Image 1 (cartoon, rainbow, N blue to C red):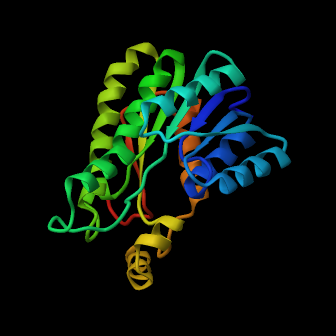
Image 2 (image 1 turned 180 degrees about the vertical axis):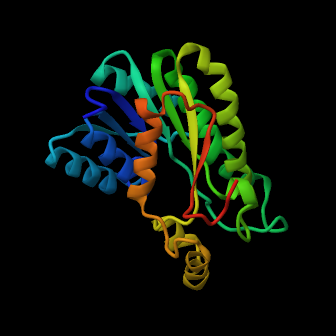
Image 3 (image 1 turned 90 degrees about the horizontal axis):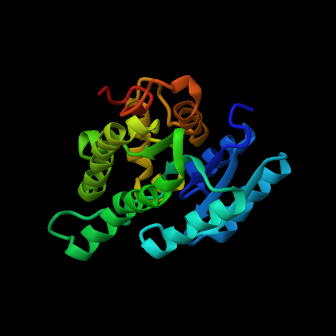
Length: 250
């Protein structure tokens, strides 16, 4: 119970990696705020799983690309659990669609950047007054931020590369306040993201080219998140940690 009574906000916390992170943090004693935007059923199922195991959590709907929704998320958190936040996991994001440069327009560019980068900016800025010494932030970047991503993923990759740079910048800025900021860069993880955006044959080929010869599991990402939030990582900040089975070495 290394996170007993810690307050954790997980954006996109209702499904896939977000669900695994929410469940993992709650299992170690954290009081978890599960943020979701559109899929209430999955968020409610995650909440039910946590409560059935004796954990403490709440769900809150917010579109984290909208400042007013983010303000409501932070207000609901502090009203429910007290006037501070210990952990922030910026996980909300997505590719939206695969589009080549010729196919995309400004609206698509803005949508992807807002979803993957602006959201983290808005949530972190709003939470900052409630983050104190010993608190920690984990941003979810991607292997795409290192290698440019697959076909039609240039803006997604760009947003994740920017997330990695933002992580380093915030680590420098917030470190003197005792706030650590790190990021994870997942490779091929078995989630609905790849069910939607990756062809089965390409997915199988990528897994086959990975030294561990498999996809990752969301629970494995959650374990890495828990490590980065914990005191075991007390001297780590500004780190973009790869979790890709050896597919890419930074």
